[in-house]
Amino acid sequence: MTDRRTITRVVLLTNPAAAAGHAEPAARRATDRLRALGVEVDARAGSSAQESLDLARAAVSAGSCDALVVVGGDGMINLGLQAAGGTDVPLGVVPAGTGNDHARAYGLPRGEPEAAADVIAAGRTRTVDLGRITSADGTRRWFGSVLASGFDSLVSDRTNRLRWPHGRMRYNLAILVEFANLRPLPFRLTLADGTVIARDLTLAAVGNTSSYGGGMLICPTADPTDGLLDITLVDAMPRHRIARFFPTLFKGTHVDHPEVTTHRTPSLRIDSPGITAYADGEFMAALPVDVEAVPGALHLLTPAWTPA
Image (cartoon, rainbow, N blue to C red; front, side, top):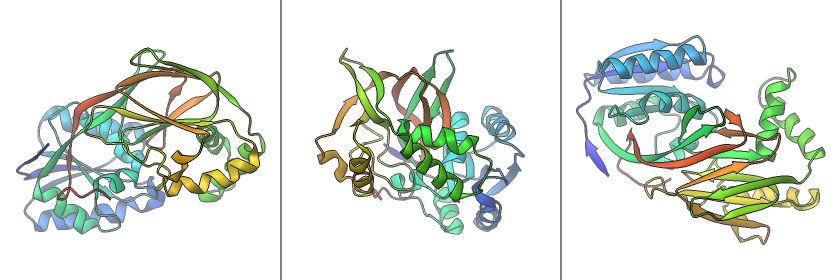
C-alpha cells in the first residue's frame, strides 16, 4: 500500500563512525538538497550506535518530525527500524553503506544523496512488513532484510573478534578461517504450522526481502508485503561443493540445487547450539530465537515502486 505524506520537517540521523566515513559527506549533501526543497532538517549525529538509537527514538516519540531519515548502510537502517518500526512515523533513507541491501530491495538511489533527498521530500510512502526477532530473554528487535545463522553468522562472529587486519580484509580473513573450520551444524526449526525441520545445515536464512551481504539473493522470491518470511536452508556439504555453491547466491540459482530447500511461514523458531543470529548485518542474539513477520510494520519513503 502506498500513500503520500507532506514532508516539511525531518530529523536526519547519522553515525559519523559508520560506513567507513562515507555517511557524513552524504548527510551534508542530502541536508543541503532537502533545505533547498523547503524541508526543515534537524541534523543529529550519535557518537555511538546506542547514542544514535537514543536520538532516533527521542525524535519519533516527540512527534516533532514528519519523517525520521537515516544516512548510512543496512546497519544504520536497522537502527532506524528500532525507532520507526511499529509507528506511524515514516522512515527515509539516504544510502551510504557498502551492502545497501535495503536500497536494492526498494529501488532507493544508491550513491546519490541528492536523489535520495528528492525521494524523501516527495513523501511517497510504502507500507511494508518487518521481521521481528524475540530472543531467549524476551528482547525484541526489528529487521528489514535477512536474518542469517550458520556459516555466515560464524564469519560475522569471527570478524568481530579479530583486531587485525582492518576493513574488508578482516572479513575476508574470517571467511577463510571459518571455511577451514567448516563443519555440519545441527539445526532445529519449528514453523508456524507445526512442521519441524531437524537436520545438519551449512546455513539457515530467513528473508523479509531477497538479498543480504551486498546483493546475494539468498531468498530470491521474498516479498516484504505478503505477511510471510521466506526460509532458505542449505544442507551440510563438503568444502569443495560449498566453494562452487556460494557464487550462485548472487544469481539466485542456488535454490535449484538439491542441497537447498525453501519454505514460507508467518513465524518460526530457530535453534542451533552455539550459533548466533545476525540481521541487516547486525548481531541480534544467540539462538534460539523466535522470528515473525509483522505485516505493515513500517512506512518507508520510496520512489515510484519498481523492484530492483
